[in-house]
Length: 580
Image (cartoon, rainbow, N blue to C red; front, side):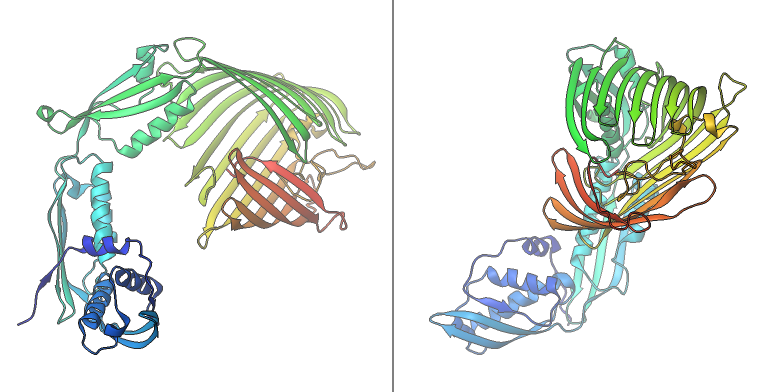
């Protein structure tokens, strides 16, 4: 009669995680996969073996060793492994090294599968997807980690989606070792999915209007929400600048059925703060900045910011007053901004004043849409053109950023597109339409390397390009463009060799980054492209870089050499800031 064996895989998997004790014997297990061999060593490390006893055929020590090897290989689907000792060298009473020859035998395969989700979760798309994707299929090798993984996934989904009464009705694996066959049974009953009954917000001490605070929360009573929704809400509340701490607490009353209350406890941030900064980049040289914020102008959440920046290239002053929407303060707000910028490079000088009004909307907690209208006056000198131009520029932009970790992403992207317009029939000295696109992508290579891509596109149609301010012309080159070239030195030139800027731009970058220490990485890259009007003149540079992922963000040091211009020059670039 065939033996029917029941066991709890969690116990075996737990032993996979047990740290090995220091023993005198070094176990050699050739012919096994690395994970299998490591598990064999872990199991053997938990037993004390005597070298002399191991040499005696069929001794208790030999039988114990073979049993430990069999147990170690069961999580991988091998229940009939056979072990032979090939070598045992003696050093006093202990063994220096023992080599084991392991015959895995046939793998145990799943012949019966009964995995189900019952209750309200049976029709939930998340549970349906989990049941389709698991590896416990009929005819597949039995892998106990797959079984444990599916159990964790079901319980995690239940917690994530507020199936608070979920439980396993049946959970077992039956193994017939003699026939190398296994049956898997999992029955998970989710019960009802809990609904949001109420949202209770408390701010201590209170500064913002309670009615206005309630509008920060997008959830409706009676709705199904997830813990990911709560996490995103917490991120949004922290990003507003109103609060120093945000805490969530869910409360359940068994008399109310499948409902819960959400308590949000808010601790206000300081009303005022300021920051003084000192930095350096090879484009702008030494940079200084001062920023002042008023996070709560009134109880309706209005905010005010003043910023001053100065470097070897430019001086800039900006003021911004932000007013959240009264109905959707968490996802819609209006801004009034005033700015002044004085910039002078080796080729171009400009002085710009701007007054702008904008509306910002957040869509699906991902996309940011800004609709704006700016009044701009710029006096500029390109060497061939000296002019003062006034424009009224309406426009719109869309952007999105997704990443697994914003501080050091291994998977993510950032996309931004913008359209600007002006007409000489509407209070402007020139007519133009300009479309720009910026994209960054990052993905993992192997276990810890990264590939980073960057693309910048722009195109302008203008009735009179000569009066178009330099702020709306395209220049390439520099730390954030084509490394190896000086800041904004790639552009069309006039007959005297003065840069006049281009109507169009195409630049890109490909970079491979390889870790060399915990917080350090080396990089190789190529940057390429051009800012042009009529003829595209392809420029390219290649280089090497060093990255330090510091507490204040990534610090990059790059050496880049142009291939198509200045062939003997190598330029140093130093930048600080996030990848996305």
